[in-house]
Image (tube, rainbow, N blue to C red; front, top):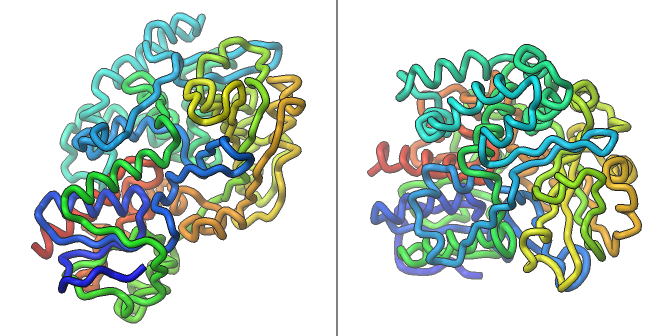
Length: 478
């Protein structure tokens, strides 16, 4: 498609994922003339939905469950319901099955969840009860560049004292029972880091806080509905979107005061390298990307036959057994190995959103972590883990669609080596992504900004990277 004529734009955004659209919306709300360019024929980035297996089966291509979508300060301020976005909240946020037909179930209520924890009930109640009551002030400090001074120093300090610890340590320190430790490990493993690494506890804490604060919902009709609603709102503000426009050089862009890239540092160097100082390019070249994922989408002829009935109440199910097994799986990935018993993130959308599959049929979504750039097909190992907790699952598969880590990057160039988080989010790259700068969204080149998940606060469908980048543009240029 051709770029619209009509003179100079105030801002051009390259990439129409959630962060690119968030940046565009923020600037358009400030009265700026905005153009968004997307290389593919459809918008969405990590929030696309497509018929990957059979006709009528709608699969989330990457992200599927969106606690940050409803918790994000940016999304909470948008009228997306007016543009078709509807959240679906399963009865429970999360289930974590264990061998022997048991499972840990996390409900919205801290009290109801703690009541299932036996000897760990009091510890669970103290941990998540306090933080879930103050989740909004906590996210104000966590969903962006590190605030100096913090807006809420007492709450952030209490959180930070535990968040900096390795998850494997904190799980053993706080909880006595294997099932509670397993639950925490499964939440912390969203970090894609070894659970012995610093700051992994922050992921276990944040994911747990969100289950009780807002739940773990999905978008009705698929994650595509999120970006479609964002696009509808942007167009209502006068913004413009052009798809099918692959930008290979900054010279291809129309004149503007600011250019924001919803891309990773590696792509920014390729497109705009000549406009960036050499020392900054070298710093971007040192940005580290993490493990990849091997992902499978399933068309099923009936629901997943879970041994533990609790798993039928949650859309999200963490598969990986107890703490020690999950930790071993994530440690193996960082050692360049493909674990025999991988930690698997599993989602059963159609159980709560019938629009995802033909009547009586179902969809499922699963992935595990693998070494960076892996071409190994983990299908048999993933399905062995599912069968372990849901015997007879494979007999219900009508079709499957598999992407290894290298194929994930082919599908979305932002997923370098299959890394869906936009870069390692360890203690060194937690707040200083992509480099240590007072305003991490800006570059030394005037008018060039990054707004992707390679900037704070990192991965997830929350729009905060784009929002903060746009705020930096408004402050520095307008």
